[in-house]
Amino acid sequence: MAASGSTPNYSINYPQGSDSVSLAADLQEMATDIDSVLLSKLNTSGGTMTGALVGTAITDSSSSTTGAFKTAGGMGIAKSLNVGQNANITGNVDISGTLTLATKTITLGGNFATSGAYNATLTLTDATNVTLPTTGTLATLAGSETLSNKTLTTPNIGAATGTSVALTGAISTDSTTNATSTTTGSIQTDGGIGVAKDVYVGGSVIAVNTPGHNLLHNGAMQIHQRGTSTASITTSGYFTADRWDLSMSSLGTWTNSIENDAPTGSGFRKSLKMLCTTADASPAAGDWALVEQRLEGQNLQSVKKGTADAQPLTLSFWVKSNKTGVYVVELADADNLRNVSATYTVNASGTWEQKTVTFPADTTGAFDNDNALSLALVFWLAAGSDRTSGTLATSWAAWTAANRAVGQTNLASNTNQYLQLTGVQLEAGSVQTPYDFKSYEQELRECQRYYETGFFRMIGYGGAGGYLGGMCFYKVPKRANPTIVQTNLSTFNTSSTTNYAVQNGGHQAYRAVTALGNADFSEDWTASADL
Image (cartoon, rainbow, N blue to C red; front, side):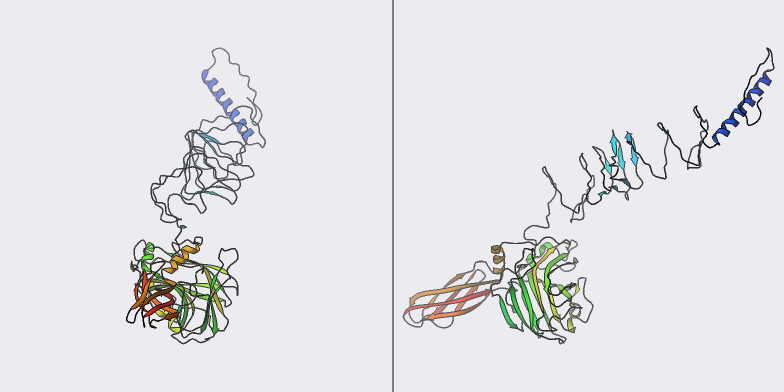
């Protein structure tokens, strides 16, 4: 036999009839020596085996330190690797070639990411699926993933800025989640969708940016039937821009004007300006100044106020002022005596700034479905302590005067301080959409529902005790029977008093004839049905 530690060299000769027990013992000793040498070779750094390494142990592996074959270092394999059961890898798998799976499933417990440096592609054949958990993401930094005619179960397919995910097959989802906004539904996107073929929709198509989605009138300040400037204002009224009321009580003196000034490139050309000409640095408790637009309830039913499906309201506008600070905007529900307020900040003096405010939905108190005042949009200019001493009502609540304008800057603290507005839009929903530009004709007709001007002249022949008159028909039926005001009266052979019979579609004007003969009278008139 060989000496211990040396390479054994066996030459065994047994004469005929030798003891078989002795032969078996010698063979067992030989096997033991061979095992010892093999183990010595494997434990020697750089050891090489020219044959196959075969193990008969069937111990399964549950970690890197268990199983029938273990190594504390790495393993390099020049040929193929076939695994009869699962391969559990706690580190990374770097593949310079192609990973192909046929009739199997690849399940990722985290993210599948590719680097643009390799332009890696995940190619799946036959019925192979890719399944990600609810927290997983199929993502790429600069490369691409190709999933052709396969099932992809994942909540997110994301790509870094400037990259895209291309799916050459059909995209389908078995989710039945309905869409109630731009951020709900079974398929959502933060961007637009381009479709080269037909689109079939089984339910309703609801577009938020459709003509008429602005609940306000004359938000671009294009219509000003009463004129372009009124000075020395100390009481409430409509002065220049149609539908915009300047309301106040003993707080400064103002000039209200239409300015040919608007933010460059915005599409707006005019703005409404409130200029303080007599200051009130310390308003009395009950004083206030504001500009507002009042809305009919029947035009607000889409808001669904007072129901479980009530919509939030988003206000967007451009503002310019030489008095920086915090300002308050308010929605006041006249039907249910409720209100909600929000603040915005004028950051830079004399600079156009666009602001957006979203008011929460109100499930309490529905708007009346009629032609009366239901909601006022209020831009506060200044207020005394009766309206500023509480806590600003940033959620809908019962009307409390002290909570309406808390924190409001006093625009009347010095003379020549001003605030300008244009591009004012109020819309249902929580998303600001582009301004709803209307034609001048459409905007004018909407404003003429509330205010219209005209000229009337009547010529005739009659005698004393008779009447001369006629009918003035309005271009647009009024919200309600209007108030008629006459100016620039001219009369011949008629009394000085005009009598009116007023309806919302027009009014009749007539005067008594004072003597036999020709008679005529003329006048300018206004018909006002503003809220």
